[in-house]
Length: 251
Image (cartoon, rainbow, N blue to C red; front, side, top):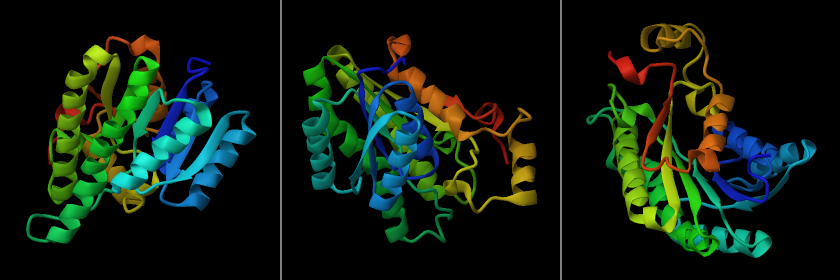
């Protein structure tokens, strides 16, 4: 129960990686605000947490909407009296080159994968300052470090998200607010539903040195660590959890 007494908000927690992170934080004793664009999906995650003896509540929020993000934190603070942990997880991972990506689609991925981190971090900080500190964790893919073909929007958004992570960490260090990123490799979640079967196996064989399939739980375990006092000296970092892919990424 390393997070007993802590209050956490997880965005995009209605499915996939976000759900796994929310469940894991709750299993460690945190009260978890399950935020998602879909109330039904958020409720499913809450039911799963409840069934395991944890405490959670569902919240509907569009992470690209400034007013909704502000309202989300107001409601969480009203319910539990503070916020200690924010996991900015919501995002999309479209494909496309500079030629095939429309400006509208480029704007969409930048909004969901980068602007949402700016908004979440900006508006959670007053609550964390009131509590004497906190931990902000962002999902940043490895393509933000080393882009690959056909992922221009996603790679640009994640590069920006990593820069945001470092800037928030620097600006908030004196306030005891840490900000880090987790950079997953290929994880079997709905975000990667288009890569299955033989194509997925070939991808892993080509790009990932470790002979294993990274699970959502591996990312969730890293999130718990970054949220605890065990990581009190870590801020402004991108923690890569990818079986060695980023270390030797090529195409």
